[in-house]
Amino acid sequence: MEKKDLKTFVLGKLELREGMRVLDLGCGPGGDLLALGERLRDASYDGVDASAAAIAEAEAAAAGDGRFRFRTMDISAGLPFEDGCFDAVYSINLLECIVDKAALLREIHRVLKPGGQTVMAHLDFDTQLFDGTDKDRVRRLVQAYSDWQQAWMDDCDAWMGRRLWKHLNGSGLFDGAVDAFVLTDTRFEPGRYGYDRAMDFGAMAKRGLVTEADYAAFLQEQQALGEAGRFFYSITMYAYDGRKKGG
Image (tube, rainbow, N blue to C red; front, side, top):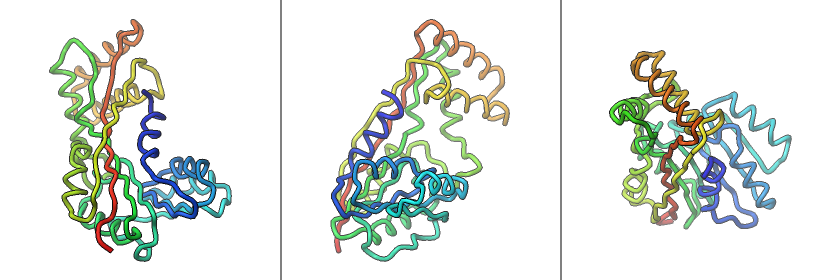
C-alpha cells in the first residue's frame, strides 16, 4: 500500500456534501484540498500553512479557482476565522509540531459548526519497521529519527499517532473514534516512503545524531535487500474521526 493509498484512507473519512466549507490545517502545497475539490465541486476550501513557499505553490496550483483560499500563518497563535464557520476541519501530521495542543483543539472546536467534523491523522513514527539482520542497529536508527526535532518543528512527539485519542476525545470537545492504516513498501527506490526515510537517516548521520558507521551498514543492507527483492518497510498512521460536542 503506497502513499496515495494512505491519503485515500484519510481523505475518505471526510463526509462531503454540497455547499460545505472545509479547512485544512498545515495544508502544504494544497494537494489534499485540490483532490477534495475534484470530488466535490460545490464547496469551498481554506488552507493554512506556516510555509510561505508552500502557500505560493498551492495558490499557483489552484490557478485562480475561487473555491480555494490559502494563507500563510502560524496557527499556534490561533485561527483567524469566525466561530462556527466550517463544516469540517482536517489535518495530517500537524499536531505533533504544536506546543500547546489543547489550545489548538479549542480553536478547532470554536470554528466548527455545531456537530461539525474533524479528521486529524498522524503517522506514529515509532512504528517504523525496516527488515535487517542487526535488530539493535535498526532500532537505534528508528528511535533517533523518532526523537529528532527538526528545525521547522516547534515540538516533537513520535507517538502522536497513538495519542490522538487521548488528545481529542480526552479533551471533552469531540466525540469520535480512531482507525489505523499500515503503509507498506517492498521496493527500495526514490519516491517510496521507506526509501525516503532511509535517506533521512543519512541526514541524521551528517548531524551526528547517529553514527556514520551505523548508517553506512544500514544503507548497504537495505540496498542489498532491495536488489534481491526482499526489502520491507512499514509505518502505521492513525486517524481520529470526530464530531464537535456542544454548541
